[in-house]
Image (cartoon, rainbow, N blue to C red; front, side):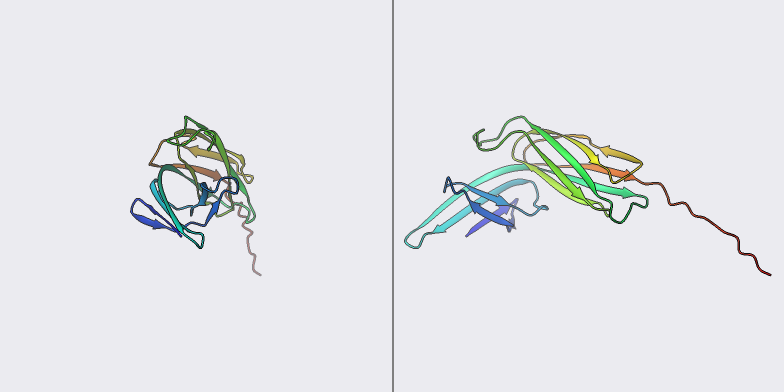
Length: 174
């Protein structure tokens, strides 16, 4: 059993996996809308004979990357937003445990949407769009975001498609 209240709200993980090489280490995958802040983690283990308990807390920042599609994109349009983060160091975590540099490819369809990138340490993140779905222009508001602990950040990537040409044909009578 485990529970992870984040800023006073209970969070149910998508998964929790014990490390095969180090039984004292766990990897948690949280829902993408988990708010940034302080996560208090409490774990209770029962091996059938005796139980063990552990607790810890972790701060992290969240970067919400919003994809906006303006104009008529193809229904099967695909977009990839690349987030490349160069870390300034980790906070309370042995540097060998977590890489301070990381990147993520966020995939979007024609409807756009929001995806999140999380970090437990300060990092400067550069946002680019290598796959733009055939858009005629791309604008990125906040192309560089400096993350720090315990805060929410945003960036917006907008793809513009030209308006569809409308052909008007006269109708003749008689």
